[in-house]
Image (cartoon, rainbow, N blue to C red; front, side):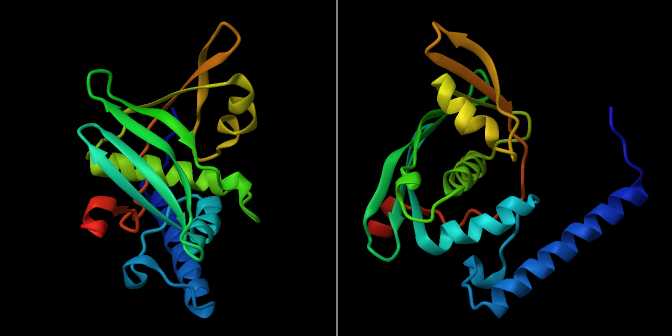
Length: 196
């Protein structure tokens, strides 16, 4: 088991805080709007710190919640065109799992969208966990084609998604354990409240 001393942890925490301050300064210098009037809580990953603002600058994400299921929608901010509606996550309370029922954000079809699907996946998992007040240790579960796992899900560095088993060479069962990241997800709005 990997252990660090209190002193090492304080140094690590100080580095993260400094990176967050530099990141927020970058936003103010470049006149980028931050959610919550600049009080954004940033993810620990540098990759997400760089790419999350790009996604949020270009797209709006909303959701509809019904019982233990949430469907997400992505809309282009400039054209108001709905890009995606095939994003469904559900909670399996018995097995303590976040089930990714459908994840086709269609962002790869948009211009200059490299890595935005990865950012979207990260944001939705964290939003879902916050909505249902999930603690660390819940599982993340999805089924996908082995080729999709290899090209996309295995490349997500903010997760450790592993193939549990392959069914008839066509479907890969993929699992991970959810780890909390104190990221602000308040920019994802409830569709019913916005439209109502």
